[in-house]
Length: 155
Image (cartoon, rainbow, N blue to C red):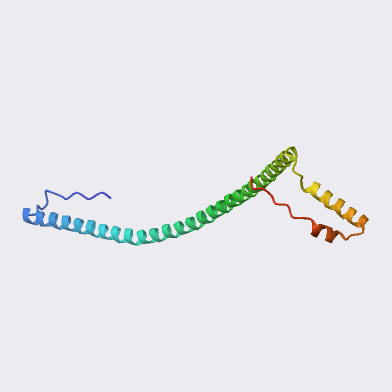
């Protein structure tokens, strides 16, 4: 809005009145600037606390979402590890069983080469002893009891 021009020819105000008038205008302007600043500060404080509360709320929601997502991933990884571990255990058991079988076969062959009878040979001999005992009329238990116990050498 344009200010109207003062007429200079009609009446000239005194210089002290002029300076008072200018001083009052400056003071009024300074007062308005000060009040505007206070208003801006109060609004910033009020809006700032609202903004802070909104940010805290959003942060809490994001944290909960992140925790849920992370827990799902941890559960998935745990399931994968347990599945893999189960497969490894199964394979290691199969390998162990194969190794045990190979060891038993080699020991059995070595014992046969040395002339030491195996479990099957002893069972056949016991069956033959029982058969002979029945044929001779003596009970098998008595025949087995009369057999002297064989001592095995430690070396």
